[in-house]
Image (cartoon, rainbow, N blue to C red):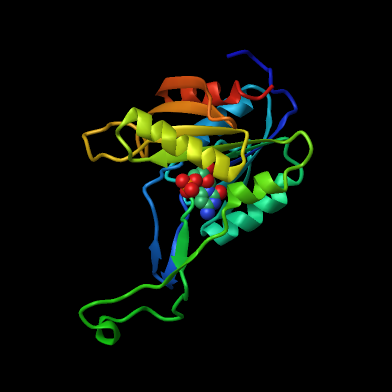
Length: 224
Ligand code: C5P
């Protein structure tokens, strides 16, 4: 993709996976490494954009030249994204955000002796950050979401994506298959990715497969 075509554009990117605390030492998490989100940051910087990164528990290093706000939980990410979105022209929600968090966070470690043979966790829904940003979007703001799905059937995967973009209200949805249930070597934690980009009508506007950098550049091509 072209040299400095995003010069001065203010791009806000979330990356990584949230951790939902259970007690001072434990959390509910997911397998997102943050690689695709950080590739988006690198590609956007290379194309001249002014990038802010909201980073949740990344397993990869972040370019030093990017403004980074560290968060851990979905609630923290919600707060940081909502603030930062005020001055962003483009918002890309690449982070894997927990849909639920433990209803209570124990002040001390949860003890086996107190719980017994089974332990039931009560979870409450987290705010949907992407849907919230889309609902309160600034004029002209472009909002891009991700959908990581384990569905292996291509048609059903697309149907899930179409349903998701209508619920989220974003402009584009980047649909990718994740998980290793069928020996897959793409998605969470890996170097490569295969994605299908849907527009708000559920129409496929782009398909990309390759390194996370090349996929990042395809996603950034959506910015006009
Ligand atoms: O609903 P689902 O988690 O599959 O949606 C994925 C998209 O929504 C991703 O872009 C993710 O960053 C975003 N999301 C969010 N807030 C949540 C859950 C997901 O912004 N609570």
